[in-house]
Amino acid sequence: MRAKEGGAWHKLFSRGAIAITGFGYFAERAEVDGFTYYNTALGVGAKYPDRQSKFFASAASYVLLTITKSKMVVELKSLDGSVLDRKEFAVDATE
Image (cartoon, rainbow, N blue to C red; front, side, top):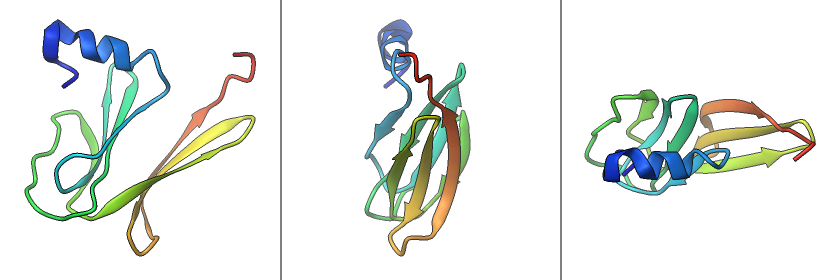
């Protein structure tokens, strides 16, 4: 989706901190131009990773966000609670 309309969707998405979608049948973290995209799904099936994928698993999953004054932690977790992927982001408390 981010490439549609000449990249206008990516430009819009990247105004935020991260983008999270629920599509397909896999857990994934992709990074494009310093912006992070996550995908999560409750089923397991077809595999079609993003070319910019930094993490990919054919696993039913969910995203857990933990936010404090100084950081945001994003964890892709399997349905049994195990961590598949984890990334920390600094939080700018002045905004």
